[in-house]
Image (cartoon, rainbow, N blue to C red; front, side, top):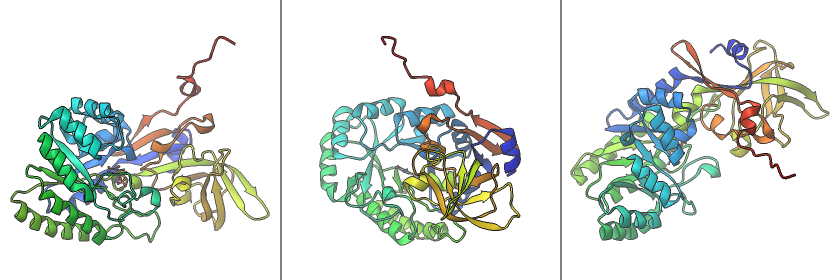
Length: 399
Ligand SMILES: *Cc1c(COP(=O)(O)O)cnc(C)c1O
């Protein structure tokens, strides 16, 4: 990736995605679960640019969406309704109805919605049920979603209640789902969740698929431990084969990774505005901030930062900060090749939840996005302009 050329051709800050990397990650997943009837449903919320979605769709992958808007984007990008699973949390029943009208699969995550769904559709529309197996996974507490106090899914302790509703309305349950959170380190924790899903699947006669969610950890630092997918694949395959014998039928196995597929493909390019030496630190202030990449501040996420303008210079220690009028620290005590004002820095692992969580805070423009694929560079989103900032604002005329 020629970052200096990209910085010249497009204004900074800039998000750049490596299409080949996305394809490579999809293939790695397929390989790890090669012995399972696998379907991948890409979690659109990680990065929903329609050109990225089109590329992912071209690899035979489906989509997992969490809002009706994401469903519309996915359909616009070319996904067929039947390839899309809608996994919302706490949305209105009207939104569920709109999703049913689009013809996408519905994943239900609370008893109240299940009851309304049964009342409305009886067995005319199939649905999936999201179970919370209460298995702990995930690094930062904000991304742990499987614990007992979590708002996600229907507690596995409430299965009797689920069954009563399903039987009463004769609901057609075609799938069971779990998503225990991001950053699974331990295959055994994941497999415990899987066992719980297999056990509960025995309670439903017409299942077509089991969805194991996501949470595969990717490397943010050089020696980061990542999910051992080969090991997980082998163990899950054995458990699955046992299950199928008991169930009497082979079910599809779905996964819905977001971060795993797009994180490493993404680079965020910024320019150094100011080097500020204080009695205690050297700050590198760049032309961006939490308005463009909030993960370091929001999740304590680590993004490696490299200086592509001065790669052979000696390493020095810096605090890299943004230009927002808030404390927006990208990294503390980072070893980076000597940074000069004007140097271009690159944040790695910026594909997932980077651009997607960007905002107009401080009334700044959101950056452009570029996709590099098969030796071609495509602008896939324009940088915003003053017009975008003002577009929906209304200047009151009365005073
Ligand atoms: C966010 C989310 C995912 C994707 O999680 P990653 O950590 O990005 O892989 C998958 N499924 C559901 C239901 C989600 O909410």
